[in-house]
Image (cartoon, rainbow over all chains, first blue to last red; front, side):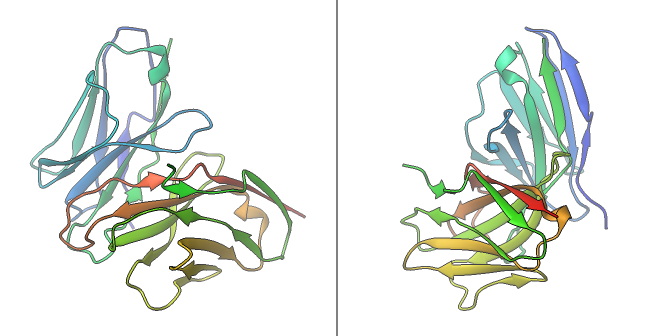
Length: 114
Length: 119
């Protein structure tokens, strides 16, 4: 079965640079979530989108922004990168009308800020 | 206060034994869902099992089952006949609020339990 696709899988950036992470949800899924997982930490919810509209907001820094496009893929834009932004970034998708709305995670993008 | 508490940072279990991973949660919302995810050393997050707050029966998925005690606010994961491939981090997570049609609410995760299966 098709899974969530994230690109790139690995990314190395310098401090103060920008980065864009992409997420392609499971076909027919209309909802996308972004999570940040620091080394040895649990995932922290950043932001979610349903039908191209922002739905819920977690601990997303002001330097980050995200959007969902008409084909349901989503992009997380990160500016003025800091060392502390080094983490594994997950995208998850779900189908809003499903009774459980189980979130299925992509493989993650590992970001290293030097 | 922590919304999801996993009190076992690490566990060692012999292969083929059953293992119980603890999870307690804190919410005042009558509608919520509880999820367990497995994260192997490769990093991906794999969905294992779900329990809804209104579900009357404990959830089961193959070798995974959930011991859901609503009054005690606990949702422990039970893995039967453990295998070497079960070695991983296990996260308990919760989504609060209405289920169907309630919006795209993010999950709150516990700190996880690192499970190591020994041959």
